Image (tube, rainbow, N blue to C red; front, side, top):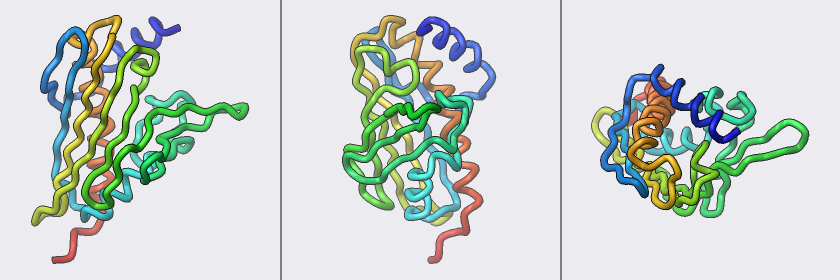
Length: 178
């Protein structure tokens, strides 16, 4: 099952343009990063992070329905997904929440959940004249059976796709008041 999911992820990854950059990769981990300026204010962009159902690709959920996603914007908050029959998935856990400024979650996304790794996903928000500069950084380290060098470009493409969806929704927000 794990091998089939990884193979499907590899096949799907080629369909998206790379929006993120692989900052580094080694056998035991990697770092990917995306950055964009969005029209939304820092407060609105931060609030949007807490509504993954509005921007997360349903193709990258266990239920194939982004409406089943939730993210509580507080320390200890769960980035979780409801599954049919009363099941659930904890994708990540919030470890730092600073409204309008930063959000950090820990955990392994997708197939990384079954690996012996620790992951840290950080969103940093900074007010700029055009709205908000949002940086998404994901660092993963530990035992990766497929190797960090092989997985980094795949994670880069998948997270880059999620970030692009977030950017498009955040750009529909009204411009910040000056």
